[in-house]
Image (tube, rainbow, N blue to C red):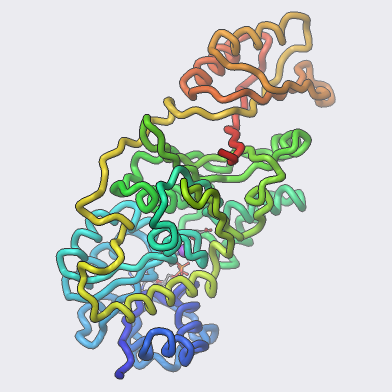
Length: 438
Ligand SMILES: NC(=O)C1=CN([C@@H]2O[C@H](COP(=O)(O)OP(=O)(O)OC[C@H]3O[C@@H](n4cnc5c(N)ncnc54)[C@H](O)[C@@H]3O)[C@@H](O)[C@H]2O)C=CC1
Ligand SMILES: N[C@@H](CC=O)C(=O)O
Ligand code: NA
């Protein structure tokens, strides 16, 4: 059978990796897919021909991405340019032209996926996006197919490689934040706008996708609570370690009677958990299903070849399913499109977690009692409290507390009241905690 013809948009980190994987493993991929998969037309604004293995196999390379989606020979368009525009217009045009799409663009799927999947359904084409979440880890496949028997209860994941790389290097080598971020950018891990990585926006895009796949709800990126890692300091990392915890940037989505939690924030987790020991650019996703129990998926979350592994796996899937009845394909969001539920996403104020708190207070009789009574009045019980040595020349001493679980609204109130005390200096640092056991 004739090889299936692919149009490739973008020849950067992931585009280059995709060319390489398709060329290196061409024979094995064809044995799996039932026919060869070849890039017949590529477009990129700029690329480095010296460093892309397999580039010579591409018949036509230009700079006009719209020419690729209009190319009648192309059956599958692979979008690897990133961003919202013109990626959205290109993907919609490809679908309109009856082409299948594969993309690694989580920003696009999280914000425009509902529209894209509706258009694809209408036209009877497939949209693959395995590379969009946790890079090379086949987590979308796992949720859509492998765990299809389960009522999924919650997911917690380290889903941004750049952020995990930064936290790991800062903790293990005492390196400076900006210096590690520059290295992540040089290695091709970071987003075009790296604030997406450090402020949790990229993780929120991915979590939005995971939540929809797990609970059968439409994509609702705008409802995701997002807090980044830029304020995580060396002091809190060290205090957390003394207490037996690691700080990880987690995406957490949980379903309960009250709705769906959808939140990305730095989180203290017990250091004995496997996921607490996932370091560097590696990602890990913990999924709790009612039948299977907890399952953990681990692998490289960013980088050329790991991400290309997911892009090419989607190409194989699409190739295998080219002739199938569109109604019998695996639904984009795991649940049949007419079966999506309208379970609400809970406001962060209504979410319950335990907390790590750090504050600076005057070392005087009665101060600790006052703080404890404010917490008590808000229904917050303290699990552990430690008074640290004051820094050289400081009048206030650091106090570190771990609390039991409480609704965020109560904690906001308690923090506001503690910060208003004359005996307390500056702001209270708060980091949410999860045991990830239930
Ligand atoms: N770098 C990584 O490790 C991962 C990236 N992704 C996603 O993959 C996508 C691509 O990311 P990278 O490869 O890192 O980006 P990149 O910046 O390395 O490459 C982008 C490529 O697209 C081209 N391009 C941009 N705008 C264009 C336009 N209007 N017309 C034609 N060409 C255009 C550029 O010239 C370049 O060749 C993004 O959506 C990103 O979020 C997903 C997982 C991992
Ligand atoms: N910038 C992202 C790339 C992969 O999705 C990350 O660092 O995880
Ligand atoms: Na993936």
